Amino acid sequence: MFTMRSATEDDTPGVASMITARCDWMEQRGSESWRENVDAFTARPATAFAPIDQETPCSQD
Image (tube, rainbow, N blue to C red; front, top):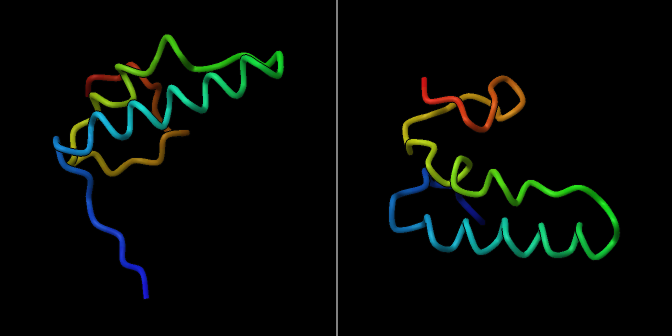
């Protein structure tokens, strides 16, 4: 059985790589991507537990 754990600072490069790969995929298909927000998405503190749709990616609250 799989379990989920909170992300740590060590996960940042892998998460950024995954988001960047998804941006590549979206752009190749003519869709807008979140490339300009990669740093904001990966800068979210590990303790932040709000769904992403309830705050902007650049929120520093």
